Image (cartoon, rainbow, N blue to C red; front, side):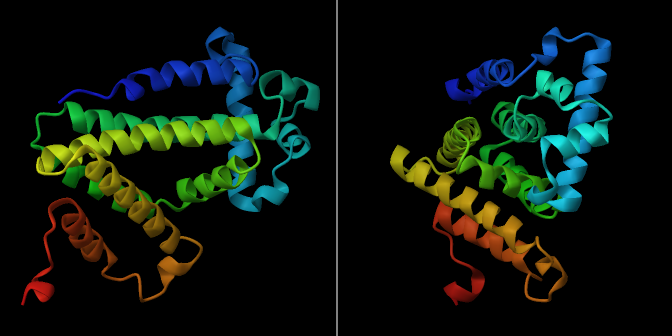
Length: 228
């Protein structure tokens, strides 16, 4: 099973994005890297605790103990800060997909492993919150939008390849549709389990429904209750 070309080039494109968004981390010395990492820690904390309203360059600079001009050497805009926060989260997803495609597991086992990760990620409240902040900025910031689009395109094509390996009867277009639906299900599950709804009773049992729905989309399998 080969890794899609889009996935092999994603990191190269992201490096170019980082360079255009401020100081390239690969060119920074130790003190510069410490300052950059401190900025990202403060910004992440502000986003998680206060949301977008508390997330400003002034607030980030104050929390990091530096001037705004110094901060803007690393990140010219707050969108650039957010992109840098999200990049390792997005890279982690793509690395998980790459490992699944490169693994010696059967296609079905690899797909099941990705589903279990999706369920675990849906319960990661902090990363989910950061993701929705990123999505909201993608509607107004071209760089966030480009990053968002590239990630979903790579993820969709990689999952479609895996889906097609699980069910070779699917045509290419059908596997892409299936992958899009699986991603939409995972995104929706993360939204349902966030914003306090995870504390309510009705999300109970969603894991099994999620798995059954995936089987139906990928293999056309029906649940035991439907078949009886």
